[in-house]
Image: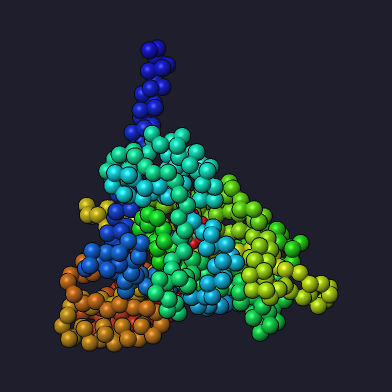
Length: 481
Ligand code: ATP
């Protein structure tokens, strides 16, 4: 081996070990986030005392506030700021014919293979992607089986380590229930919705008739969706029960692509406004478009395992309303009075998962810093989505301090979501607030009784300011708004 070859070999093995280190530190970060989420009441595994329930998570006291703030931010951008978009809250259950018309009963499936040794099921397109092979769930059974067969020798079962998998089969993701079905065998299942947007499509005419919205206009909805995911994993990224934030925008056929570019730009701005770092975000074009789609891009976030889908922004042509016209026998068209023209609107959509956003903001905000030789964990959440805005901490539990501190808490709590905490040392209380991302801690000490002032500590800089109690609400409002 000549020197150049040796240098290349060294470089390659260096790259390999960098890659391994990088992957290791990324999975360490994932573990740290999952552990903090549980420890501080953001996210709990479902049914934990009964051994858990795969693919479902519960949001704890901090998680529900964070989740609500993310949803409210989305609602503000997608409904309140827009004269051309209205809201909706449709039922989770719908007439099962909707899922036939939309193509879900036949085509809403992912490719699955089963380990013949230990029965572990894998989602084949995702496993192929992990080893660098381009694949997706829209491929036919034949196409994906061919790709899988070509790469079988590289794929081990994550549980037993064997490479003995079955053929790939399409597995339908719709979750069935017996709601309203009194047959013994459950022959007429109703489905828990697999996506929220079908509720929007089937209410298109109702919204036009009741609001007189003129095209182009949108309908937005936030709500639960359910999918029988083959291997739910990666924390909140892939659940069987999750929440979606979807906006469907109805356009004249000729305006679809113009509006699509506008929506892409708008969603990018909204995501940045949520406080996610731009270097952790990117656009990705779909390699394989479904036959009716005009264009499809995803906003991807840099999750601990790398960039992956946060939300989709898609141009869907007139497929959805055409399907529901045929399925229901009632034409879902729009009459443009000015142009005296009747047509089926085209749809562009933005569709994101609340859980994926919660995960992304936790990942983005999670910070470890050394302070006076000690490690400090702090969630540097954007202030507008932090679950608690201000913590009131009396220096001592004695009535002398706790009474006026509680009065201060009541006053602040009328303006911001606050916590009152008098347990343990002030240092420990600061650490606790840092870990839930509280932007400001207000300490009420013995001097406060004399000078009517308190110490306000900034979460990120840890700088402390002495502020007059009378001026405190104004001081905090200025910084939190
Ligand atoms: P993936 O390819 O990751 O399975 P998808 O392309 O099937 O996702 P869509 O059907 O386009 O996802 O759903 C829209 C959004 O809903 C996604 O961008 C994601 O944020 C969210 N979402 C979809 N499936 C899940 C899930 N199982 N758990 C959590 N969020 C999900």
